[in-house]
Length: 71
Image (cartoon, rainbow, N blue to C red; front, top):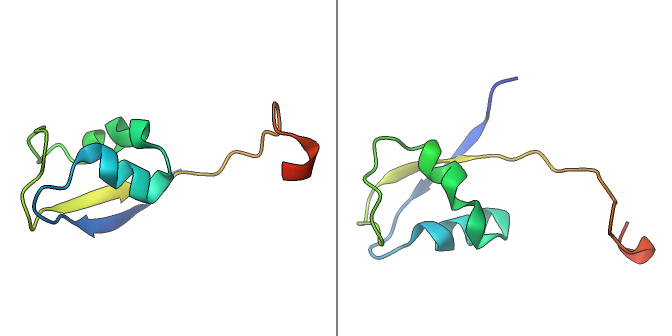
């Protein structure tokens, strides 16, 4: 199965963890975005105008540890 992507154009000063939070709700998922964008230097903050590929992650269906009212 091939990975699907959505595109994100950076604004001046955006950070990897903020972009990860925006798309995944998890600031620690940024390594997946970095891996999908080998053309981008890994810096603390990003310049404006870069086009990043954001991998679309499949949702997990596991309900282990999830309270019954959230399943």
